[in-house]
Image (tube, rainbow, N blue to C red; front, side, top):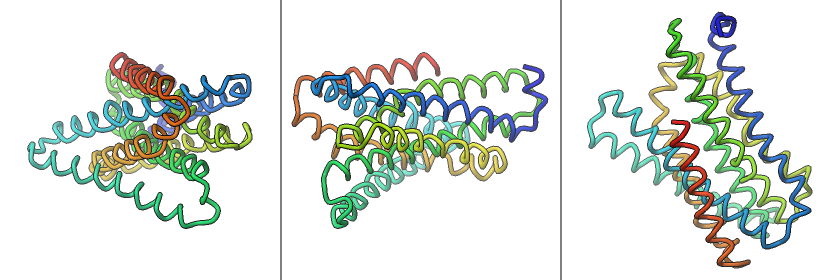
Length: 261
């Protein structure tokens, strides 16, 4: 621990976000086993992905955003405005993106559009998570307790990223992408955490002020994709397996967030 703490803060943030990225890639790698799964199981797993995204939007994004605002002394009115407006902007951004993609020939098929939006939403979600890790390490001042807290934050986000990598890769695989391409896009959604973490460590004051806005914006985007694309898609294939997957995915992500703080 002393060796790690002696490293420059930006290097510590880099190592922490490399770990969170690795966990995303590890989850995405599960797509290589999807060819051995039945259609019903794959449908249920897509429902799990939707449940994970909805839970993550609340427990991993909106709640931390609110806690950040409260820690800064923001009033309830200001906090409500920031969360409400950012959430609406995130959902509206996905809606407009879906409308724009539907007019493009390359994304005219619903499956390709759904896969792209899922990847896009999860990438947006990972940017503020990377910021959070970078800010946590960038604001250290030699305090061992604060270092442990920052390390636990990175550990918690990394564990949560495992199912999130699958959230991106699996829908793409279901829509006809090869396992290699689905894995590529799945792991790519997590690599942004490395760059966001470095930025957060270098520009702690500025990034921490924007963090609540980014968290709530990402939450709106994830809920929009889950409710407009993922859930309707898997419900059409099998209502019971889809809904069971959504409930289990939500419960799983909630459990991880509560256990890992």
